Image (tube, rainbow, N blue to C red; front, side):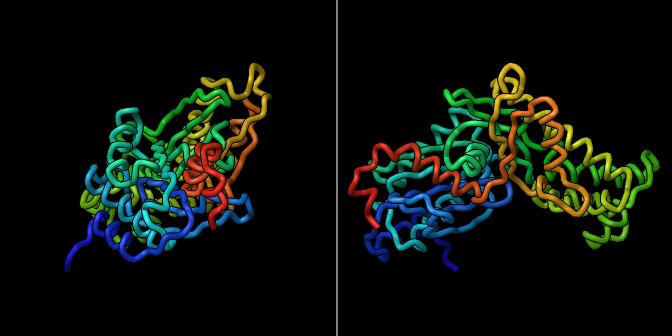
Length: 350
């Protein structure tokens, strides 16, 4: 079977799609998947926001899959979004890539140079870490406040109204993102091995994880882990850990309590460095909460526990659970950045 690259798809797009109104592409690329949305440049702020197309692909974190594969994924998801929206590259007026693994100005510039090879010179290009889009998804594209992402990985990221920024965690599993889905699951698997060896207490995590994976013995867990060390694959065990904690297992509960402390400390580190809460901690600022780890469960609500921990020191923090996904946040970032530059004719093209 012939394999079409992103550039092949662009060529198909230019040949087949009719010329229509100007659009903005917003991309959220994480450790699990990559989402692209296409919104009109002449965007009224309705509820729900108008999304012309939404497409999904695999991981685009270059630290996980390598630069070539990450770029191929990004090209595919953007070209498919334009094709689905019946637009061409010439219809695009701005692109915002918010991608995990973009942690340094050098990373940003390399990505910008690559995007410039794809899009015409009139297109405004923006590259950010995926945490920035997550923040924007809760603030409608305004960069102010703090976001906590806790999904496969975790990071806290903050901005002041005058443009200062700070981050905490987000260094990946090797360097200890222990509040993440990966971190929680890895600790649970470690607890199973320790219990099996006699180095740790017995835990219902053993039976629950083995049943979930279809394994017969903790010995098989070792082989399962190392045959594919995908972060997202291991993070998929998160619901098993939560379920075990809700059933009263002390080991699972300890893991989740420790994770709450880790996540809260990341937020507090960012808030303190940026003085978002003012001198007394009571100055209001948004705390955007994103990711499957922070979703409420039957009895264990990690997100609420984190908020309670943060607001003890910073009572001005007010939590926001976004109504739109981070890819829309990325598109809103681009829209806000170019809104004042958009020609009246372009902004009103439908």
